[in-house]
Length: 297
View 1: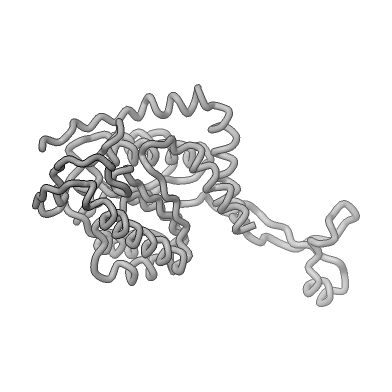
View 2 (view 1 turned 90 degrees about the vertical axis):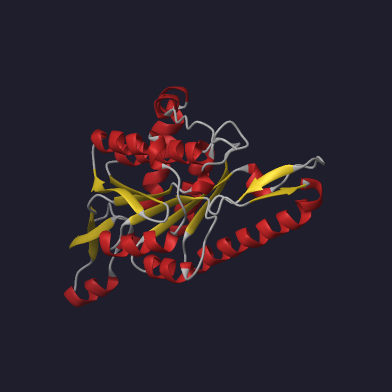
């Protein structure tokens, strides 16, 4: 089966976010992002004397007992947050039963989120991965970084290949600084070997968010009875099936796989956003940020 042409309209997506949903992006999306990730970004600076204008709950009683006077802590905003996108560009992302391939949807989501992060004053870096790492960029600020990221995401030549999350995470363990916010965008199809081991190690060094991109056909098969050809995205092996007969077994297998991933991420304290390509990603992102903010508040 010939591959569909990759058409990623990042300009249209950002224009829509800036104009048709300007109110949401300008306040809710950026604001919820800051609350979710920068709300804890405060460092202790110094003590000062308590005044009647201060909330009594801010008194540091241990320090006050030591000095014999009421003291409160002063904080200063932490340095800019380093945010790094790890984007799955493997063969399984070159699939779509909706009007967008998974990698088109993934690219528009990642670019829009990067735009939001840069607008919030943080730094963005990225790497594309299949069974290797390509086009790596250290986290920096500024519009040029957004356009560099968008260009990498929109180039069809960058997509394809096998899938090795282990190799990608192992690379990042030595490439990224401690405390980096790592955002993994993938369908997580093709996990193998000691992937939980590598993610557990990474979760001890980075703050990790996983965004799982699924096409509706990744989850459910159609109910009609007719023969369809299924192809393994990594081996190119094909098989002919009647989806009506394979539906129950297929969906049970997918459910088991997703539950395993969700449970693993939960145990590793990795926040997961599970989203399908038939829905807009803006509202799910806002809800995800709000949920994370409540979690860490």
